[in-house]
Image (cartoon, rainbow, N blue to C red; front, side):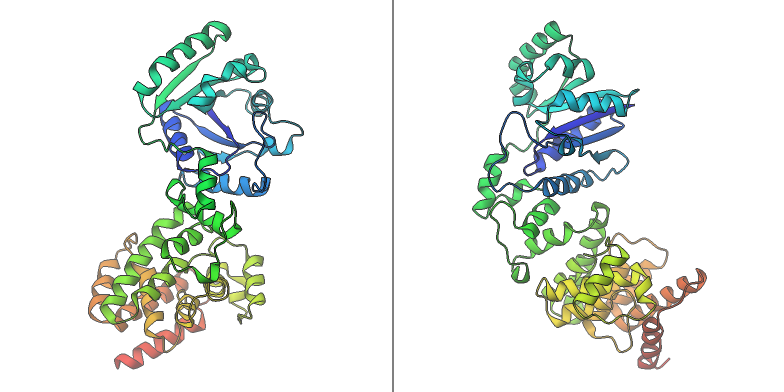
Length: 400
């Protein structure tokens, strides 16, 4: 088994870290890639007003999730729990103890690689792990990297791989923090990491989450709350909701915001859903109180209205996007359908639903409602009364 160890302060983790991790995993054929946020970095002092260890750990976990390879990437908080300075040699010894049969590789950028012989216990580092160093281009790396490779091999018997990453983001953490303080820097960060920074008001950002006029900021905040594997669905729902709004005369921007936020609480625990709904006075029936699938619509609507300042129209659309209800509003129908038939959906009847959605909105919604009822009955699950009422009123409205 090959394991890559990628350490750093991750203050904040940015797109350059992500590109390097992906490139190293591919070049080395890693079986696992372990991100290790430093506790007390030995070579620098964390700036005043830096995020807490918990916040850096959570940002690093978001970054690792963006790999979209949960079986590969993980975050290890070993340095945050170890007293004293976070020496890499100590971390690698612990890694050896955790994975005694693994082939370890230590990942690092050019600056770190070129000064490795000056680190604490370089001989211990190089006896525990091979080194994977990365830079922007092979030409940029060649002279200095060749000399350093020869030096480390001669002095320590080091095993070294160097890789070029043409799209490596060239921004230091210091520069990035300064950019964020000026209201810039978003382009250097994965969207969910930037959204987390806005939510936690880190690095001098002071966004009012209830007044986010920039849809991109709202998108980033929403993305920061869910798993990376959910993002394709959320983007698809946004695309479908806007297209349906333009076709049927709803406000495209309201439908865009409803779609962006419709799954923002998808990964909360049952207790977290219930606490949010209780806090904001969202009434729940007994069936909803025990179903996370149903609850995410209720808690998501609560956040949309009370934390993100969205309109009653957006609130109602999210509230009923899972079950539907009797006498649905236009916007409720549109989000219900967009969630059902967005471009990543591929169930056998989806093309027929998409055709109906362009030609006969109520028949398309009825199709989705009936499919949901059929699925629940096949699985011996209770069908929510709102879904049954939606079917009843749609049939009546269609004269069926």
